[in-house]
Length: 105
Image (cartoon, rainbow, N blue to C red):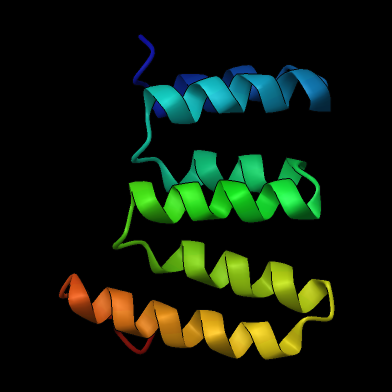
Protein backbone atom coordinates (compact mmCIF):
# COMPACT_ATOMS: atom_id res chain seq x y z
CA UNK A 1 0.00 0.00 0.00
CA UNK A 2 2.56 2.57 -1.15
CA UNK A 3 0.07 5.47 -1.12
CA UNK A 4 -0.81 5.21 2.57
CA UNK A 5 0.79 8.16 4.37
CA UNK A 6 0.26 6.68 7.84
CA UNK A 7 2.13 3.51 6.90
CA UNK A 8 5.05 5.56 5.56
CA UNK A 9 5.14 7.66 8.73
CA UNK A 10 5.19 4.61 10.98
CA UNK A 11 7.85 2.90 8.86
CA UNK A 12 10.06 6.00 8.94
CA UNK A 13 9.83 6.15 12.74
CA UNK A 14 11.40 2.69 12.95
CA UNK A 15 14.49 3.69 10.97
CA UNK A 16 17.76 5.43 11.75
CA UNK A 17 18.04 8.97 10.26
CA UNK A 18 19.95 7.97 7.10
CA UNK A 19 17.58 5.10 6.31
CA UNK A 20 14.62 7.33 7.19
CA UNK A 21 15.82 9.87 4.61
CA UNK A 22 16.00 7.23 1.90
CA UNK A 23 12.59 5.97 2.86
CA UNK A 24 11.12 9.48 2.80
CA UNK A 25 12.49 10.08 -0.69
CA UNK A 26 10.58 7.00 -1.82
CA UNK A 27 7.54 8.10 0.19
CA UNK A 28 7.29 11.52 -1.48
CA UNK A 29 7.71 9.81 -4.83
CA UNK A 30 4.75 7.53 -4.04
CA UNK A 31 2.62 10.17 -2.28
CA UNK A 32 3.72 13.56 -3.65
CA UNK A 33 0.63 15.26 -2.22
CA UNK A 34 1.63 14.63 1.41
CA UNK A 35 2.83 17.82 3.04
CA UNK A 36 3.84 15.92 6.17
CA UNK A 37 6.20 13.63 4.29
CA UNK A 38 7.85 16.51 2.40
CA UNK A 39 8.38 18.49 5.62
CA UNK A 40 9.76 15.45 7.44
CA UNK A 41 12.24 14.89 4.62
CA UNK A 42 13.32 18.54 4.64
CA UNK A 43 13.97 18.36 8.41
CA UNK A 44 16.34 15.44 7.95
CA UNK A 45 18.34 17.08 5.16
CA UNK A 46 21.20 19.55 5.14
CA UNK A 47 20.41 23.19 4.46
CA UNK A 48 21.09 23.00 0.72
CA UNK A 49 19.23 19.73 0.26
CA UNK A 50 16.33 21.00 2.40
CA UNK A 51 16.00 23.96 0.04
CA UNK A 52 15.77 21.56 -2.90
CA UNK A 53 13.25 19.36 -1.11
CA UNK A 54 11.04 22.33 -0.24
CA UNK A 55 11.21 23.61 -3.83
CA UNK A 56 10.13 20.18 -5.09
CA UNK A 57 7.38 20.12 -2.48
CA UNK A 58 6.15 23.53 -3.59
CA UNK A 59 6.03 22.33 -7.18
CA UNK A 60 4.15 19.17 -6.16
CA UNK A 61 1.67 21.00 -3.89
CA UNK A 62 1.45 24.65 -5.01
CA UNK A 63 -1.51 25.36 -2.69
CA UNK A 64 0.27 24.39 0.57
CA UNK A 65 1.15 27.49 2.56
CA UNK A 66 2.98 25.40 5.18
CA UNK A 67 5.72 24.62 2.68
CA UNK A 68 6.42 28.33 2.22
CA UNK A 69 6.42 28.78 6.00
CA UNK A 70 8.93 25.94 6.37
CA UNK A 71 11.14 27.50 3.68
CA UNK A 72 11.00 30.87 5.45
CA UNK A 73 11.90 29.24 8.78
CA UNK A 74 14.80 27.42 7.14
CA UNK A 75 16.21 30.66 5.76
CA UNK A 76 15.66 32.48 9.04
CA UNK A 77 17.55 29.75 10.90
CA UNK A 78 20.47 30.29 8.51
CA UNK A 79 20.42 34.04 9.18
CA UNK A 80 19.11 34.90 5.70
CA UNK A 81 16.49 37.35 6.93
CA UNK A 82 16.27 39.22 3.61
CA UNK A 83 15.32 35.98 1.85
CA UNK A 84 12.45 35.41 4.28
CA UNK A 85 10.57 38.44 2.94
CA UNK A 86 11.09 37.26 -0.63
CA UNK A 87 9.69 33.83 0.23
CA UNK A 88 6.62 35.32 1.91
CA UNK A 89 5.96 37.66 -1.05
CA UNK A 90 6.33 34.74 -3.45
CA UNK A 91 4.00 32.65 -1.28
CA UNK A 92 1.31 35.31 -1.31
CA UNK A 93 1.59 35.75 -5.07
CA UNK A 94 1.52 32.01 -5.83
CA UNK A 95 -1.25 31.22 -3.36
CA UNK A 96 -3.40 34.01 -4.80
CA UNK A 97 -2.71 32.63 -8.28
CA UNK A 98 -4.10 29.27 -7.13
CA UNK A 99 -7.08 30.94 -5.40
CA UNK A 100 -6.02 29.86 -1.92
CA UNK A 101 -7.75 31.76 0.85
CA UNK A 102 -5.99 31.65 4.19
CA UNK A 103 -7.87 32.24 7.40
CA UNK A 104 -6.42 34.44 10.09
CA UNK A 105 -5.83 31.35 12.22
